[in-house]
Image 1 (tube, helix red, strand yellow):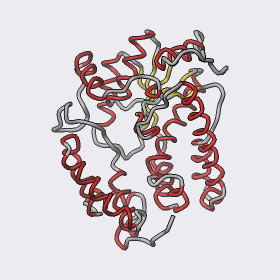
Image 2: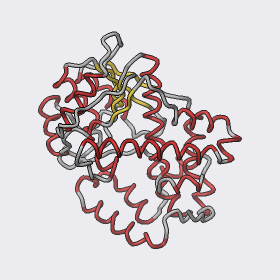
Image 3: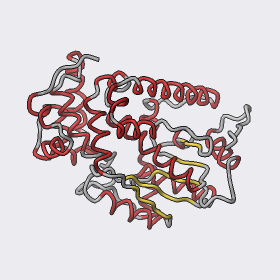
Length: 328
């Protein structure tokens, strides 16, 4: 699809965002936008803003990776109904995810790309699945509700030109990661890994992937209040009210935290930082419901649930003996 242009004389990010969407609008498509959707505050508020500003035809796309928290799909379906949007749930074979996650957890070279390659590449696989679906459906835009903190540690570009440069550099870096992975034996010898990795890095001009919170204001308390007032939104964490709630996570985060600690993925110099960080999370009300994850981060303890996850992924041996320390 043709790339939208943004006037150089405007620094109104929100206006620029809607200009891009207007320039790429295709009245013949089945939907105007596909939103990667979990039913959490970020994806739901993004849909709310689109409906409010443009009255758009929106479909929602949810990936079930077999390791989400209990009730995840029910929560997504409930909130899709409140928004009045069609929801598509994509569930690749479990073995495909298991092979991919085992690769992300055990391949040392990936930790040179990101200290948490599990979440880094899993999120990008979800994005790629959404883009592939949109391409088949003829939908021009895929929108992903990554927060400013997730994209660039909370520091949003100050001008549209800076944002354009940031996006260009990020794309170049990402394709550089592809070359790194293509050189790995697992990619060359395992057809499942190769197929998934190729899907992650698939590029198409027919669909534009966008991160709206690079353009739109992002204030957590205001977002939760708006959703509560407009839709009676509730967070997915049992026993936690909306004021306390901040974010959710896949079960695999627990396993990765334990394995990373036991196998020495966390450098010694980061030891105190890790403990201080986790202690701060424990003190924050928003994280009280996730005590087992925090304990794993702080003490590298394998809870019964973590053991089950390790067995499912064929990683129980690493969980027991700590694996082999890999520098890098």
